Image (cartoon, rainbow, N blue to C red; front, top):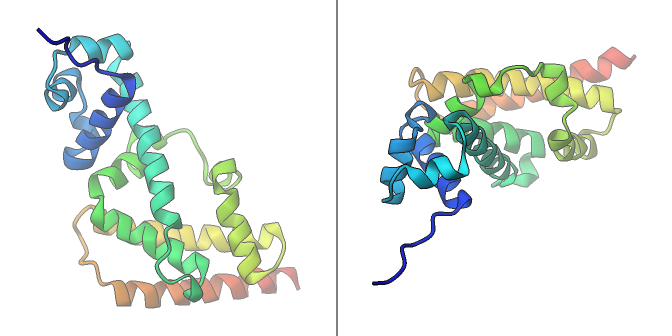
Length: 190
């Protein structure tokens, strides 16, 4: 008889990520992950002492997936910030369960907007904006906060099925918000 396939920690995290993606993070538990992996619950609990630890690992995978998604800009000539903003909103439309897991769950708890903007993970975005618009770091952070709040509002409404996704309209609104944020940041220095 051939040996049973070994269930790795990575396989467990991947299964939990897929459950979060397909049906929502609230459905991650030992039974659903075991069912996805076609195994007993024992390998899940072997790798993770608690389901909370597993959800944190799935959250980290979702966060990494989201970051990659954001930086895959279709039309970089239209501007890095507009590309990131429209990708953020599109992500909410295409991956509503992951969006809610990442930004509307207790896993996003405990971080302020100012802490988020100073996070190391955001430095490539801040640098890209700075390269595109010039200005100092504080100006760029002001621009980012404005666009992030605008895009997050749009994305939240879409992820919760309250608004139809209209890419052309969304991009025109993002452009106006972006131009206003750049103008306001430059005027603040004067």
